[in-house]
Image 1: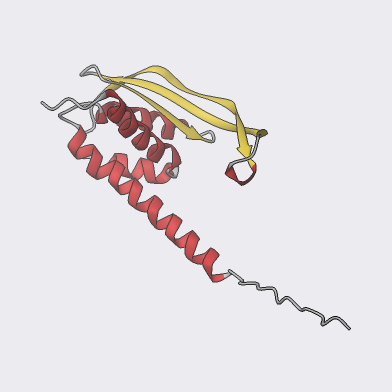
Image 2: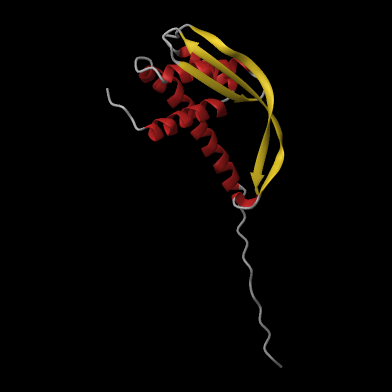
Length: 156
């Protein structure tokens, strides 16, 4: 078994948790139902709804400021095989957070990870890439190029 450095493993986990959190609830549920084997799990923390403070920066580089609050749902589960997973989802969809937590736990299992990575994570990542691409194409279609002509006056 190949052991990955801690930093690399943490970055990978951050990536799949981000994909799960950013997916639409229906997409997560559909990918979950398409899995051939869904292990049993129990809730460590039942899905609960709360608020988080969202911070922003002007232009991505300016001073941070409080943008506002948003609703978030979180959950934690443990598979019968012992792996523990967490899930966060924007909004109030409890099932989304619970499934995200179960998928996180499955991704930590050497036996379950290959199937889950292809059937859930890769599928959701492709959908998100397509959504971003469509949005970028729509934005590009409305792009206007402005130019400024400098006029000089001759003295006199």
